[in-house]
Image 1 (cartoon, rainbow, N blue to C red):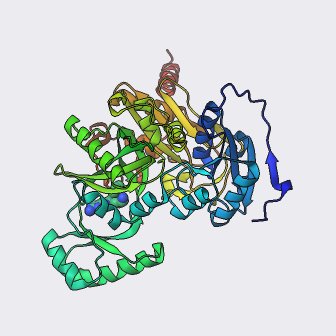
Image 2: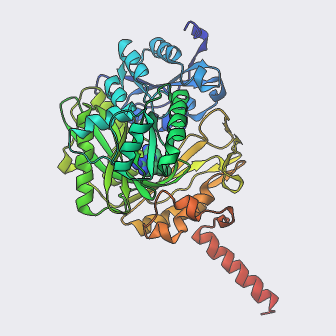
Image 3: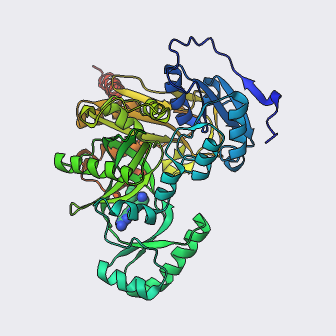
Length: 500
Ligand code: MV4
């Protein structure tokens, strides 16, 4: 506040021809984010003729998202607590640039009800759900209680906070061991503890509560039956203010490493048609249960016995949304903008198509041969792949620096094909074509996973990486054409050597 002076305003002018004029109330969007998602939101805004204000930290002065925007405002020093999480600075940036709306992207302030409320109190459109929906879904207990009334299956457990050991032991005996203690304010795998028998309860309950208190400022925990080998399937939903809520099918997100997703795909290879339709109906009801507006994702757990249960709802646009866009032909950011303006959804449930198969792999600046330690620095070479059905959502170009302060994900590589096998083949070829220099990335690790028989046959669970990955599995990736060239060279040298 007051820290943004006139001279800090940076206007980057492009010879960009605005071919379309904005048709709705939103003429200028401030994107409260960075990296690939800020770039991806910018592309849609520009296509719709909407102006873009970037915000950036001092570490991102030369970032691609700043260069792509029409205007950019520095909002503080590198640490995100002082920049991308700095609510007063972001609101001030919106005020001085005259933005009508704020898109929060994912991470940072995207699921923060205090931010959503502050944006609306400042007279701006928040491109996302209401603060009240965020509050309900931010509390796993409140979320389960809200959806229970809609007949959505929940993992056996409690929908009340548990803080008494005797009571917990009694409930656990009914559920059956192993039991999971989860933090109500947690999510994404944080604040979970497995209890294998009665004797372990006292210690684990106390630990879970104190961890929850220090991590989330709320000590409430609840119990669920622990499903050790399961799949993670989520459903994309979107709702408008006119009472229409639709789902855009599911995404399979079981390939993850330490709660960080690595590969996502749509549709899920594990569901049959009946399950798929049931899951979509559950997801729409979850959204209705919290009076949802905008794009959201409902997470389910699928155990190997075939049970499908609601886990939680994420009230943001997710990293993996492109696989849904590839099979439905929709632009989720455009839909988010339209419904935030008060427009009705442009299609009904019956009109949502599901065509072909899409896979996304996340490209992290991490070294898979060195326990995935972050490998930031300068991207000396950066050449993304091209090709039929290939999409790259990235936040960098060659010769830019990857700052150490933020998430190390630098790009997402997405492949689409008419069927899953062709999609996997296209993805492997695209990975082989990707040229990245100066840093190590998780691409070789992704190639390993895609090549694994359990990935091909769809039988993987969230234990896949733990079960199958060893650094010895990493090998240099060659594209089919390079492999053919290498084989040709080898044959030539062999004939030379044989004197033929
Ligand atoms: C579970 C579970 C097993 N049983 N709940 C982790 C993220 C959060 N959204 C919920 N998570 C889990 N909840 C019960 N009752 C196993 C996980 C889990 C997991 C879920 C989705 C994706 C990856 C995961 C990795 C480990 C554990």
